[in-house]
Image (cartoon, rainbow, N blue to C red; front, side, top):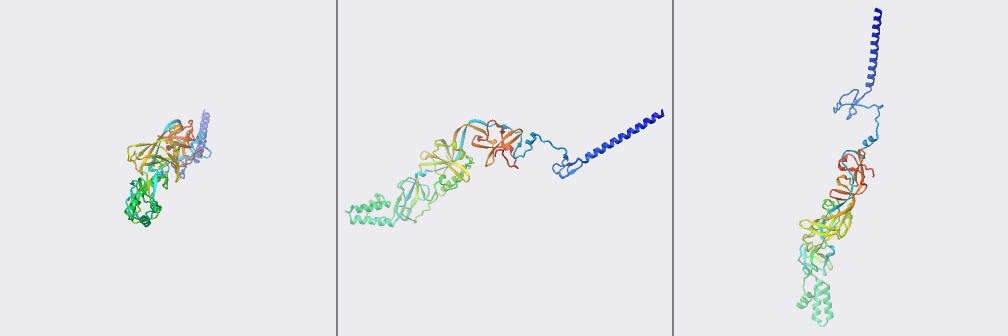
Length: 448
């Protein structure tokens, strides 16, 4: 009995010893495994330690480093998600499809009232001399046909008068000689009534008047008329109300905004102060001091963005709103001329206006409105376009990401923009491209 008890005690002791050995082995294995674990800070990778904790710099929890024996498998879905932000964007925003439909296109452009250059007449001086009296003082001063502009003392004219008086007094019967002397005075600019008055009085005049041969507004020859076609540096503002805001408002933006052209036109009006020609100045024969422009024949010069060319055609009706006047003027397109200046392209459109029926003045600024129906075309909301300056892009949906894609655009109207190339109705694009822009990355399109 005692022997059986001893055997049981020995077996129990042996079991305890074996369990202790197994526990010691497992503890050594755990120590070996944990000895290879390293923990680091995601924000400061230079911070490492062999146990969990917090970063002494930023206070973030340390994370366990992945060993080389534990590679991360990248699936097909993950490949799209780990692309750089300049080639794809992960987002869950609203998407739309392009729509093919017909929309009325409202085009707005800035402009300026200017003279019809075909109704501009030169007033040359037919005899040289000194200006004794100047009756008109300012540029753009109204003048009537036959009105005296100035009086000139001319030695040449005095000599011609004395020759006529001598012939008339000494050779009354020599009609051919008398007519020749009269014709010489006529070629110098004297009228028949003036010549007959000289013969009747028997005295020469020392100062002869120069009459305006036309009615209109008188301008010095060295003053530029307010027209954009002759204004240097014309451009678009934008097309901005000026030029071409672009669409106004724009441009002339582009807009096309040719504000420089209108500024040049208005600067010519600013020179409409006193004449630089003064009394006492000498003029030579044939010199053109003044020009007369017909104020009853004006035109509106407008500046449209170049891409609106398909809508702007000769004969199209336009509505002109002149600043400072409550009523709109109905007109039509009479002339179209493309312009390229300072890297921008726009259309200069001219519309003739009858100034007699309207109270308008040269140099007044105006805004033109043209409404045309654009037949079946592909349209998307304007906010779905991202304008990079040299190109326009949209974001095409591809699985869980949006990919930048270059497109070509046409006209704009009421928040919609026409797509002329790059999309079709089956494509899905981001409804608002602005939300998908990373300010620190340069967008790389997939169809450069």
